[in-house]
Amino acid sequence: MPGNSFGECFKITNWGESHGKAIGVVVDGCPSLLSLCEEDIQKELNRRAPGQSEVTTARKESDTVEILSGLFQGKTTGAPISLIIFNKDFKNEDYQDLATTFRPSHADFTYEKKYSIRDPFGGGRSSARLTAGHVAAGAIARKILAEKAGVEMVAYTKKIKDVVATVDVERLTREKVDTNVIRCPDQYAAEKMTALIKEAKEQGDSLGGIIECVVRNVPLGLGEPLFDKIEADLAKAMLSINATKGFEIGSGFAGTEQYGSEHNDPFVVRDGKIVTETNNSGGVQGGITNGMPIIFRVAFKPTSTIQKKQKTVTLEGKEIEVEAQGRHDPCVVPRAVPIVEAMAAVVLCDHYLRNKMLR
Ligand SMILES: Cc1cc2nc3c(=O)[nH]c(=O)nc-3n(C[C@H](O)[C@H](O)[C@H](O)COP(=O)(O)O)c2cc1C
Image (cartoon, helix red, strand yellow):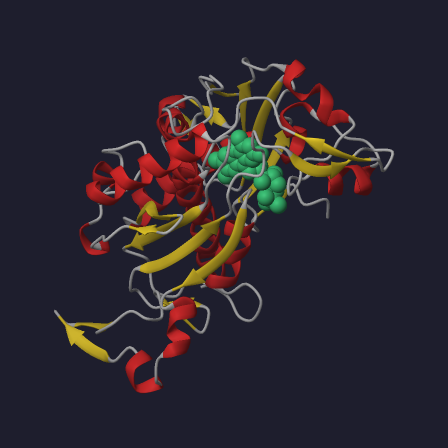
């Protein structure tokens, strides 16, 4: 009910606040006998951590994870796995004004009106710091999928403002994505994107963009009718990430410009296997995976907290101007790449385990 948990068989429950003592996640439903250690989770968290480069927030958090439960002698026991990350670098003084003011397009106004109480420090519960829990849980989901089915997922920055990367998704690897701070394997586009973000940051402004994710070796048959279709659950997972404004799978919105004869994916036999010649479906038909790669995109808006004067109102309803303080991401996209991968892993692992129970 309160919206802090996600998943049916592989269920994650996220807790904590940006500037509280700690943040964390409880993962319930992880099968027993999976080898797991803190390093498996830490390497994923390091990709999301703040303070990585000049195009991200300057907040420095090591995001060191500790596993509190669910393991015995390095293997999962089938019990809930509780993960904790202590918060270290917080500057509450930067957020003092925000206790009585609403940042335009952030969650301050809606949280205040809904709950009549709000932790303003670092955005409290609405902060994207909480997505460290998504990434930690995603690391476990990713390991299950990789070991049991060979599934792999790679996301990258496809677009920042109006600069679009040209990328061959069939040859996309995580190593290529991580060659630059933007997480864009097209080096030429990455340089232009970096320059754009730096320029926006110098002006106290922010930018948005698009992340594309490809999932390979997806088992055929994941996804349930009618409401738990793979694309429906992926959309929910992606749109649950902070600052997202759009989701599309396969041809997405561009497919609306084609004829059916162009858009249909013809079936063919290759190496004794039924595959589709094209993949406008993005690997999902009728809500169920067809064995082709899943390809989807997520749109992120420009970061709402900016160092420019903007109109807002106070708690008492007085119109004023606000210019935010504090350390913020001038563009959330590079740090959101591992979050997109993690939530894709959570969705697919959940459906993988559901499928095992049903059939
Ligand atoms: C990785 C990541 C980092 C973010 N960093 C910031 C930030 O530094 N400042 C900010 O105002 N918003 C940041 N956001 C977005 C806010 O958390 C989000 O806009 C806010 O919670 C309001 O929710 P909404 O934009 O989804 O409506 C970030 C989002 C992500 C995914």
